[in-house]
Amino acid sequence: MPLRSLPDHPDLAQLKRQARELRRDHGQGSHSAAARILGQHPRLAHRAPEQILDGTFALADAQLVIAREYGFGSWPSLKRHVEAATRWALVNPHPRFDEALAAFDAGDLARLRTMLRADPSLVHARGCLEPPLGYFTGAMLLHHVAGNPYRCPLPADIVEIARLLIESGADVNAETLAPQRGTTTMGLIVTSAHASEVGVAGPLMDLLLTHGAELDLQSDDSLSGPLNNHAPRAAERMIELGAQVDVLAAAALGRMDLLRGCFDAEGGLRRRPRRSARTLSSRDAIGLAVLSAYVNQRTEAVEFLLEKDGNWNMIGVNNGTALHRATSGGDLDMVKRLLARGADLNDRNNPFRATPFSWADHARQYEVVDWMRANCAIDLHDAVCFDLPDQVRARLDEDPRSVDRAIDQWEVPRSTALHWAAWTARPHLVSLLLQRGANPNLLAGDGRAPLDVAEKTAAAEVAALLTAHGGRRAADL
Image 1 (spheres, helix red, strand yellow):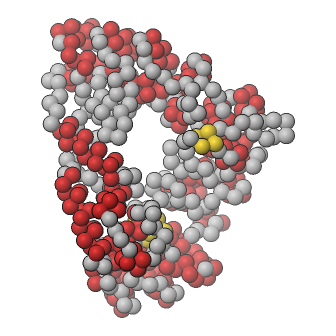
Image 2 (cartoon, one colour):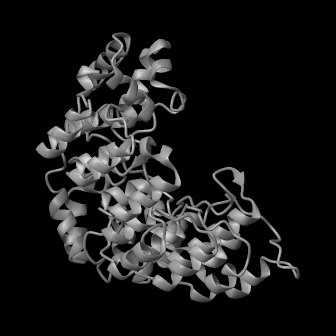
Image 3 (cartoon, one colour):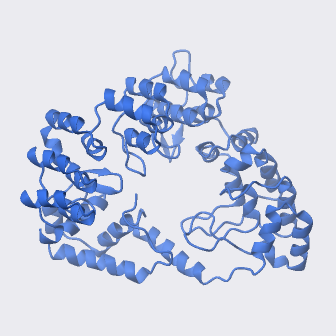
C-alpha cells in the first residue's frame, strides 16, 4: 500500500525536490530518513540504520524510495504517470463525446449512427480524461463495448453498436491511454466479468477478430486474464479458438475432465504450468490451482485438489491466498481445512499487508474472527491491533525478542507492535510492551517513532507513557 497519495495534478518538479530532500536528510544523518530508506529500498532493506547512514545514497536511490512511497515500483513508472497526467490535463475532450456515450448507454443505435455520420471524428474521440488516471483513461467509444470497468448494464444491442463503431472507422486495436500500459478493446472484453455474465463476450470477440483485432492465444498465461477477472465465457471462447488449457485454467473453469487429465496415474502433475516467465513447481501449481478453483467457486475442483500436496500459500488470483479469501468470505469450514493443511495464518503477501485474520475482521465475518481468536495463535502485531492482550502475552512469552520485530503491517512498512499500540491509542498495551522491553525509539518505515504516532492520534496517555520510558520524536533522535 502506498504511504502517500499523489494529487490529481502531480508536479514532477516537486517530486524531484522530495528526492533531493531525502538525500540531503540522509547526508545529515537523519534517523527518520534511514527508516524510510529501510522501509522502501529493496536493495537496502536488510541493513542496519547505521549502515544506511554510513553508506552512499545516490539521487537514483532517493528517487526510488519516493516512487515506492507513492505506490510505484520505480522512478520511471512514477515519472511516466506524472507526465501522462500533465499531458492529458491539457486535452480538450470532444464536445459531443458525452452525448454520444449517452446514446451508446441507451442502446439507441439510430441516434448514434446519426451522430457519427454528422461528425465522423467522434469515433476517434477520447473520454475518461479526468483524474485519477487508470487503465480506462482516454477510452474511445469502442472501448466501452466491454463494460469494463462496469458503469451500467450493457445495452441489449451492444454487438450491433460495436459493429456500427467499427464500420464507422474505429480502430479495433487502438489502446486506451493508461500511464503505464494501454489496453485494447479485446483486452477489455476478455477481462470483463460483465460481458461474460451477460453472454456477449464471445460474440464481441468474434466481431473484433473478423475486423483484424489481435488476441493472444499462445502465451503461457493467455487464459489468466479472463479467469482471474471472473470472465469464464471469454476463456471458453479462447479455448475454442486454440488457447491451451493447463491445470490452472482447468481448475478455474471447473472442467473436471480436463483437470483429471492434468495428472498421471500416480497423481503426479503431467505438465507444470508457466506464469510470469517461470515454470511453477508442482506444489506451487497445485496450490495456485486450488486458489483459482476456490475463487471461481468450483467446489468439485477444490475437493479434488485439496487431496494433493500443494503450497496453500500461493497468491496470483487478484489478491491474497486461499485462506485470505476463505476468512473474508466467512467460509469457516474452508478456513479450518486450510489451516489443518498448513496454510500460513500470518501471511501478509498482499497489497494490504494484512493477515487472513485481519481480512476476516475487515469483512465483518465475526464467526470466523471468534473461532480464530479462540483456536489460533494470532501474531503479535495483529494481537495489538485488535486488542487481544492474552494473545500479546502469549506471543511475547513464546519469543521475547519479537517485542521489537519490525514488519510491514497494513499501510506502515517496518513497524513494531509498539507503533500499533500507539496508533490504536491503547495505553494498557503500550505499558505491557514497554514492560517487556520494547524500544520506544525505533522508527517505522514511514520515518516515525511511536511518540510521533501518539501525538498524531492525540493519545495523551500513550505519549506520557512513552516519554516516561525515554521515548522521543523522530526529529530528536
